[in-house]
Image: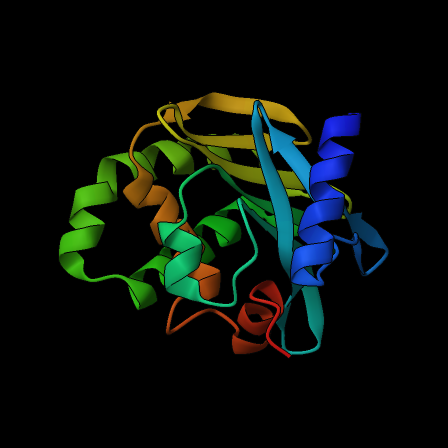
Length: 192
């Protein structure tokens, strides 16, 4: 971090009383700040996706600034990142099924029709991954004017997917009114 960035961080922390500390989840540390190209992001929150007693993955949500509101998380100008760390072996097809279920629960049919081509592109990237193993990292990034990027263990999967609507739909899986898990939504929005 440059001296200028450190000074800006210090001023922000002083004014808001908030620090951008890393968060450790199930042994994985999500950095308090990351940069996507020239876009600085802060860790909004992090938590664990569970099914029953099984911990499936840890998730960190990075935004241009912190918010506790789902609608603001989507409306903020700038880049975003959802960083997913696999905790239990996971078949990619089940990951895709979960993606579909979450989007279906949190969007209407018109929205799903609007993003169907973009969602199909993301699914194609995921099909290349037969199995996800503990420790694997999947990043889903949005960069304005460039699109949605999917990385698997820091390697770009396919080409960027145009259109912010598909990224908003993916975020709705964790942040929407019918999120996959309300406790995880609260952790990502840092609601105590």
